[in-house]
Length: 292
Ligand code: GDP
Ligand code: ZN
Image: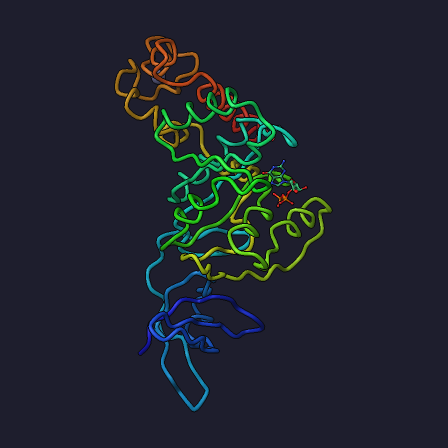
C-alpha cells in the first residue's frame, strides 16, 4: 500500500501524488466509498493499492483534519485572508467574518493586508495593531511593488492553504508573484458567483516551488456565516474567551446583559472596539436570518 495526497479529481478518476517519489497515480475509488456515499476529496490523505499494470485503487481515506463545502476540499491548514483598505476599501466587518469562519472550521487564519503601496502608513499601522493585539498573524504586502512576498511564501511552506477574500483585493496578483504562471481559478470563480450561474468547479491542489500546496479556488466566502448560532459566536473571537468568565450570567451574549466581562474589557481597551462591533453585528445578522 502507498500513501499519497489527492491532488485533483476528473471524471471518476483521482490523481494521487506519492510524496516520496513525486509520481502522480491515476486511481479509481473502491466501490465501498460509493456505497457509503463517502466522497473522496481533493486534499485527502489516502492509501492506494495496485490492481494491475496501470490500475490503482484508493483503499482507505485517512482521518480528516477538516473539510469545506463549495467547493469540497479537505485538510485545509491555513486560510490566507486577503484584504485591502483602498480600491477596494474592505470593511473590517468582512475581515472579521472570514476570521470567524476560519476559527469555526479549525483553520489557522493568516491576514494579508495587500496594496500597502496606496495607503498611508499610519492607517496600515492602526489596522495591523488591532489584529496583532488579538494574536493573529498579519502580513503587509504590495503585490504591485513586490513587498512582503517572501514572508507570505514562508507562511505557505509545509501546509495546505486557501486564499480567501473579496474580489479585487489582489489574490491572483499575489499568487502570481509567489509563483509566476500558477493556474488560478480564483478570479474566475468570483465572477461566476456574481453572475449567479451554477458551475461545476473542479478543484486542484497545486504544488508551490517554494514549498506547500495551495487550493486553486477559494474555500469559503464571507456569506457562509448563516449556519452559526448566537450562543457559539463568542468563542470564535479569541480575545473574548478569557473575559467571558467575568460575566455575571453564564449564558451571557455580551449584548444587553448587565455586569458583562466582555463589555468591561471593551471599555478598558483590552478588546478592540471594532472587533466588538463586528461581534454585535454578527449576532444581529444571525437573529435576522433566523426570523426569515
Ligand atoms: P482578485 O480579484 O483578488 O484576484 O484581485 P486581482 O489580483 O485580480 O487584482 C485586482 C486589481 O488590483 C488588479 O488591477 C491588480 O493589478 C491590482 N493590484 C493587485 N495587487 C496590488 C497592489 O499591491 N497594489 C496596487 N496598487 N494594486 C494592486
Ligand atoms: Zn458577557
